[in-house]
Image 1 (cartoon, rainbow, N blue to C red):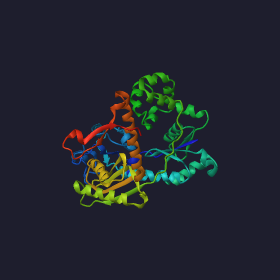
Image 2 (image 1 turned 180 degrees about the vertical axis):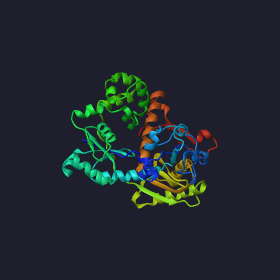
Image 3 (image 1 turned 90 degrees about the horizontal axis):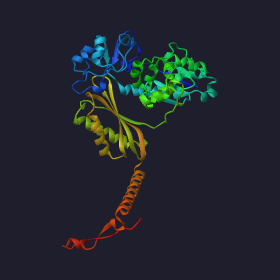
Length: 415
């Protein structure tokens, strides 16, 4: 039995400050990714109606999550800002805050893991875990779901079913505090009556909603009755996956690996942008490399985040092409991403998402890889042009004025 925990509009609720901020109001997340420094909304326009944000220079772009009141007036996630305003002139824009969302979602997943569940965080507000292994602790699936609710400490939609997709459909359909549990043959019959909008919860099949709607496919049962070969021919792998999900076939949950995280934050003060902010970034890099918990390991992936003076936040994941522990190279790579900051910052943060090998071990590994590539290159040259094609230069008379006497070519010995 797979359990799905669904927190609707998690990003919007977190950025707005709680579900009470959405009650009866048409609210949507502002299109933060398209902001520029000159177009970011100021503190005077944050939380005001959308026309005030436009006057401040917020360019058009797709809005984020929307409240129920905004949905009732025809505004949906991803809709262009101009079209959203045409449908709902009093739409209120809330600055997106990916930093706070990440922190809140990490706390939520940790709360589920505290009951012993191996959690797969699909995305912010949506998580899965297998309940079979927890029956020895809590007795049955109902007691396991009750323990998960107590650990969350907040209202959540919970569904359970034989697969992840069944559990997702149950969690989306439930409207009460009681969990909806699907089991047996009735689970597939119930799933067949659900709308194809459930495919929008998967990144691989989200793009199929519009073409399937144009083709007149409304429910998952209608999709399951189509030929898988025809869907594969028209939509590729996404069509095959959509047909599998409609037929009730899905992969088991993939629990996340618990990883050690190191974080450093700093109030930037007057250094909210420009070269002064880069110096603050250098201080964060120095602090992170000096942490005792690093134990000499290199950095493979880091997260650069910021709290914005105008409200909201910004977060960027940086994966280095090569695991690094050199302060200058790390600061140089991060300074390029720092220029993408959409507005002046009040707080800058730097965290390690993934460590690499110890610096000494990595250097030895790179030397071994370099030597192996050199041997392969020599072998290819000899195979193409003969044994004498690969030669090495030997210094004979360095002080000679005749170039031919200084260096001579000798056969390259096999190693």
